[in-house]
Length: 78
Length: 175
Image (tube, rainbow over all chains, first blue to last red; front, side, top):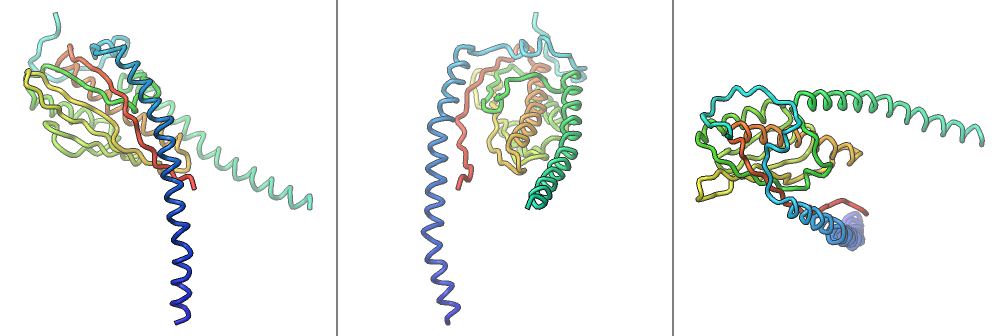
């Protein structure tokens, strides 16, 4: 009986700390999200908007070519 | 007392030396492997934070079955992930070396084009160093993205690409 009571007391004392820990972590993560991640995403998006849509081939202009062994039936660009 | 301090400093020094002796050759090996992959074109040089973007591809592809097979073979070639799903709708790539996942999603279109988006969907730190985990995930993702891009170019050299930044939510445990 005494042991059971002790367990209940320990759980009751621990609970507020558990929820406090969760609350603090959530607040800090939300803060980081709002301040840093969103600001970074906005900056990157602005950069992407300036660049717009690009030809994928341009990325590979100065990259070593690999052997193409697929016969896909498509014609290369004129 | 001084002897105690010396023993503690010595123990820390030995620990650091063992850690460096294990990490440095691994890092060197990884770097050499990446450089070789760059030289062969399996990896390409990308922006450091490229994995924080969602890439959109628009292509004209006639033989879509051949495209799916080529895509599947190209991604599987490097053995950095397990792919599940259907290339005709959505494929999820699960990292083998780290706990991350990325997805390639087919976007429906009525104009005869084939549209896809590719993005990292989840990343969890598994080792003591989040930097090392992030580096490893970034290299593996570069392998996959390069394989996808090369397959697109193979089937449609006029493939168009655009990007959109993703605002990731971090769930780090601070306290």
